[in-house]
Amino acid sequence: PITHFRMAYLRLTSLAVIFFLATSVMFTLKKTEGGRPTCGETCFKTKCYTKGCSCSYPVCKRNHIIALEAKTVDEHRLLCESHEDCFKKGTGNYCASFPNSDIHFGWCFYAESEGYLLKDFLKMSKDDLKTPIESPY
Image 1 (cartoon, rainbow, N blue to C red):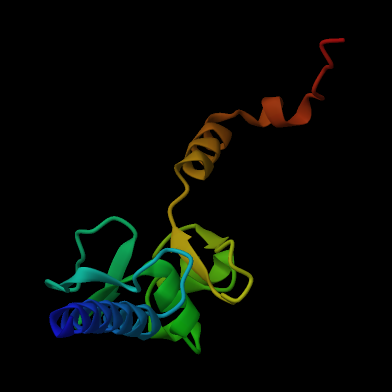
Image 2: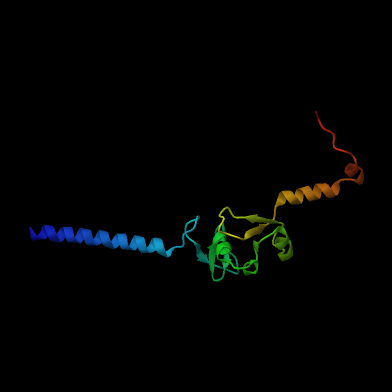
């Protein structure tokens, strides 16, 4: 009969240890929409090779974590508050905001469609700009 109590005690103890470890891991990670804040790699020549991650030296972090932790747009080359910030930094032509309303900064990138529109616009003649657009209806 004593061995049954020892077995039950060992089972409860091991269950409590597992629960404690799971809880401590859960609370050590920042609460984020994308899961873990780090990408599991270190920066190599300021580059990260995991999709959705950027260098926050010395480790690669998820882009939204970098934007969430930043105090100013100067803390990372891709952080922005407007399209103008991206132009000034030379890191893109579009400042996209994150869907999380707690993140006050956006992320710069190059929007190819804008480049195509500009290229097509520059090909137009002055006469095309003067003619009114006719409705097909």
